Image (spheres, helix red, strand yellow):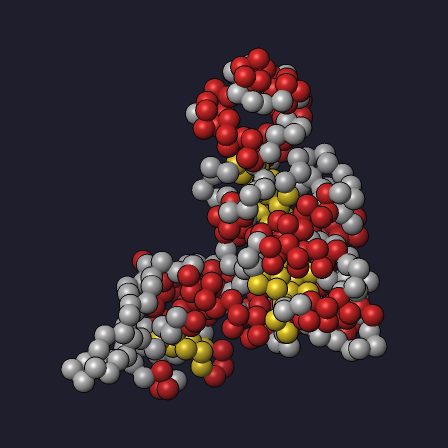
Length: 368
């Protein structure tokens, strides 16, 4: 809440003073000698205690969480950004912020077809264990959240404080997201919607995600800002093609011409982010060994972490539906779906007819 104090300046000050408490106690004169602008030092010396108290009181309410950068729940993929927020305000489940995410964004005034396909894609991606992230705006954002909630949790990144919902028509949707997913923002309680907040919000949508999918957008669209930020942050960029007569498809066509991955179904997204998803697992592939004839033998896998190994043990050696795994392990459905997706991408399990899964490690995967 100190105007003008960003991440880089704070990191330099913490390196000098050691802790935030020592920094605050230093005083404006000493902070000026450390190279900080005098007005920023004065703001640290005389903070807005009422505003700070309001934020702490909000975080102490049921479902409220205030995450600093040294909190283990602070999402590591967001922490990589040079302008990562110093504090996140979260309503709902903060652990979801670190789960594998795909952002879906697009026009605030989409076509009926755009809304339908967005809901379908979001539902399919959530059903495969990914968290769908968007910005709670009208149109495509709302459709993405609605579709994801049919199969799993979703994250809404706000351009307001955590106690405000914008647009107001999404109030009921926001409550559903808080119950089954998470609402997150860098703006403190009491902050209303302001135009310059939303481009900054967009960098968090892309920063939290492995990739950004634009399903429908005009040539001049805030969604293209999110896509550009995703590219700059090293995230994947996806776009859904549309009719050449649809002006709300031109932004997507422009992205495709610039190198975005053309998406026709959820599998197109999964194929592109598979290497990143695999990297999120603690186990790694071992290089294939070579026999006496110099030919490479079948690759082996390093041991899985305890939780993934436990899921394989609970699965046994017969095809099983996810509901059975939920009953056997006690893990929530969203977590089971995410783990199954990673295990399938790594070749440990295979999907079978009827929505079942079976083990492939140490057995013929065709036996399903």
